[in-house]
Amino acid sequence: MKYGIALFPSKQLQDFANSYRKRYDTHYALIPPHLTLKNAFEASDEEIKEISRELENIAKQTRPIQLKVLKASSFYPVNNVIYLKVEPNEELMNLHESLHSGSLSQETEYAFVPHITIGQNLSSDEHSDVFGQLGMLKIEHEEEIDRFHLLYQLENGSWTVYETFRLGRDR
Image 1 (spheres, one colour):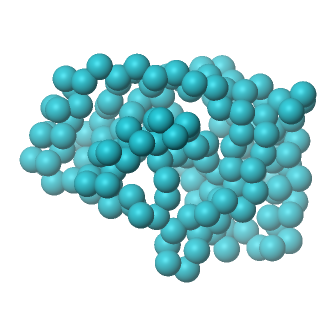
Image 2 (spheres, rainbow, N blue to C red):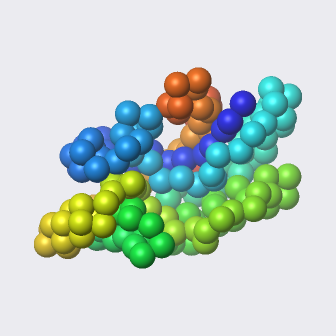
């Protein structure tokens, strides 16, 4: 089965992201707005039990994460993806590193850029228009995230939560 790991922001930030995603993100119906911590990977039922135990240990050792979004950005010219840029911080970067080391090691195609996608598979004209509009908006959002989620992909391509991990020893 195919799995992935993500953070889900608050409803407020999800609503803002979805106001763009429903029109500009081809994956809108497949998964709520999220920050991908670990790209899709394959695991058997037995492997996922071991991975789950490892994720529980990582969660206990990770403090809640301050999620700060101050602007929209783009991966253009590599691809026409528009996203909400999440400011990297020590907790977030350490969590990402932990999810890509040891038995969880996985080759990645791109460097980790914390973000929440709001538009993808856009034509160049559409990308330019939407990105231009977003550039005029004042985006300021900050919140604390106290959990991450192990997701699995259903047959229809959508993603759903398999297990949730609360961050920090005192939780």
